[in-house]
Picture (cartoon, rainbow, N blue to C red):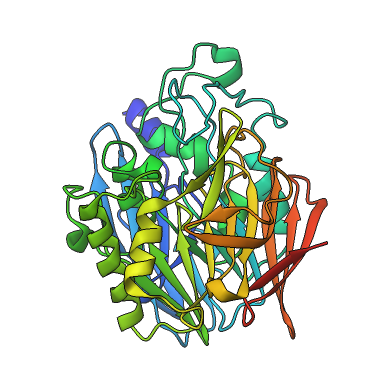
Length: 423
C-alpha cells in the first residue's frame, strides 16, 4: 500500500507539453497546435474567454512519434487565445491583417549527410554543438527578438539523416523520427514558435523519401485525411490571405532543378493555374526551390530551376499576379531582380539559416542570364543569416541579419516596379 501511495504521488497531474503551443496559417485560416505526451488527452483552448477541447491530429503510440499532436482552428475575429494545459496557460500569437514585420528563414537543420543534396553542395558533417558551425538556435533567438508579425520558413527542417561519426560533435540522434525533429527544429525554434504565427513550406528534405511523415504530422496546415499517405511527390498549392497581403504556398520539393521533365512541367503548370484561379493578385509565392536562382558547382555558376521556369512561362504569370518569390534550397542569400522587359518579380533566396553553407557565388550577379532573362541587379552573400522584411510606404525594407542580429545587408524592394536594390 505504501508503494501505491508513492506511485500516485509522483504521477503527473496533467499532460506535459513537448513543444510550445504555436499558431500556423493555412488555406482555412489560423490553426493552433501543440505536441504533448499521451497522458489525459488533448488540452483545452480558450478563445476570447470561451474554452473548448482541442482535436487530436495524431495519436501515434508507435516508436517514431509516440505522443499526441493536438490542434484547433482559430476563428478570424478572435482577439485572444491560449492553450490551457493543467495549471499552465500558454498564450498564442494571433495573425494580423497586412503584417508589417516578416521574418524569413530557411534550411535550418544540422547537416549529417553523406551525399550532396543541392547542386554544388559539399559533403560535410556539421558540429551541432558549436553555435558558430550550427547557429540555428541563435538565429531563432535573434529573430524572435525582432518581434515579427509573421514568420515564414521556406523548408528543409531536418538534416540529421545519418548516424553521427563523432558523437562529441553531433550526438547520437539521427533519422526521421521525433528525436531528430525535436533536436533539429522544435527545441531550437521554441522561442520563435511562440513569437508570431508561421507559414511552413515543405522542402526536399521533407519529400516522400525522407522526412515527409513528420512534416505532414507536425507542420502541414491541412487535414491529414486530405493529404493521405505520401504516395505522390506533390501536394496541392494553397493561398494564405492576411488582409490585402496574399501568400501562395507551392510545394516544390520534387521539382527537378536542372532539366524540365514534361510530366513535372505539366504538374506545376496546373499548380500555377490553380493559384491564379483563387483570385491571387499582387501576392508572394513561397516555395522551397527558387524559380530563378543560382548555385555554384565546381566554381561554375549554375542557374536553377528548369522545371518551375518552364511551368511559369507556360502559364504566362504576370508581375501583377506575383510580386515576389521567396525560396530557400541554395544554402546562401540571393536577391535578384530583372530587366524591365522581362516582367518578372524579384527572387529572394534565404537558405542559410543554419545548415552547412553552399559554395559561394559572385557577390554581384548583375548581368547574369537565367531562363533567357537578364538579371538587372543581383546580390549574393555566403554567411548564416535570417531576413527581416519591414513594410514601408514606398515598398519593403529588407535587412539580412546575422545569427546575432547584426545588420549584414540593407535592400529596398519596390515590388510594383519589380526592383530590388541593396546598398
